[in-house]
Length: 345
Image (tube, rainbow, N blue to C red; front, top):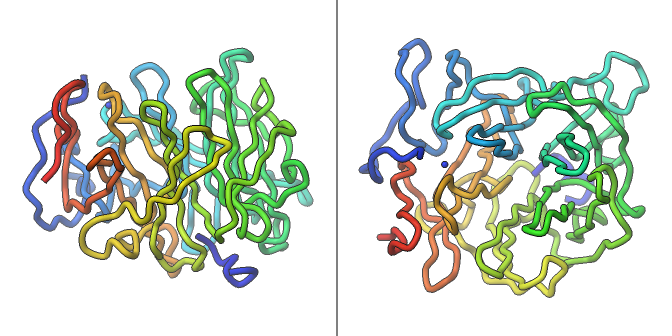
C-alpha cells in the first residue's frame, strides 16, 4: 500500500489467551518489564526502549532465533532495512541496519531510494542469506518498479547489494518470498501497475528469477502473504487504495502456480472489512505448533510513517478455512499443541 495509487492507484509457551482490554503500549519504555503478549495496533518497543521500526516486513527463523526485517521509516522518508532478533516473538532486540542505502550518487540504492517489503531466505546450497525487496529509484516516484536483491553471510547482515531488475521484464512492486517444502523458492509480486499478481520460481542461488513465471490472476491486488498447511496453499492480498486500508481477500490453491480460487474476506470482528485498519505483509508459522500461523499486517500512518503500527493476529481454521479474528491482546498460549482441538470462540 503506497502512494502508487496516484500512478494506478514459537518451547515459547506462557499462559493462555487473555481477556480483551485497552493498553497503551507493548512494553512501556524504561519499565524494564518483558512483553508476554501481543497487543495489535499498540506502540511496540524493542528491548532498548525504542519503538520497533520494521514496516512492510517479514520473519526468518534460524535455529531458535527469529529475525524480523522491515523498512526503517522516518516521518516521510525510507532509510534502509532494519533487523531485530527474538527468541520468544514478544521481545525484540535491535540488531541494526541489515541493508543501508549507498552514499554513492546514482547508485540503485542511493540515499533517497525506496526499499520496501524486504523478505529474507537462507539458501542451503550457497550458505548465504538472500534478501529481496521492492526497489524504486531516487527521484523516480514509482516508475522503476524493480525487484532488488542483496546477500549476507549472517542473518543480521550486513547485506551486500547485488542487483535490481524487472523479473522477466515485468514490473515488480509489492512482493513476498516463499520457500516451499522441497527447497524451491518463489517470488510473488504485483505487476502491470498492480493489476496483475505473478509468481516466479527463483534460481538455485535465489539471486534471480527463472523463466518459470506465471500470472496468478488480474484483480488489482497487492501486499501478498502466502502460507501452506497440508497440501493447500493460501494467499492473502489487499486492494490498491494508496495508504488507505481496504478489504483483504483470501485465495486457495493446490499448486503455487494455480489455479487459485477466491474464498472471500478472512477477517472477522470490528472493522474487518478494512482489515482492522491494516494491510497484510507476512504469515508466520507459529513456533512448535504445526498448522498454526500468525498473520502480520501494517497499520500505516501516512502522516508519520515511523508511527505506523503492527497488527499480529492468530490465524484460526473454521470449517477448514482460515479466518483472522480481531483480538485486543493475546499470547502464544492461544495455539493448542499438535493434535489438540483448534482454539476458537
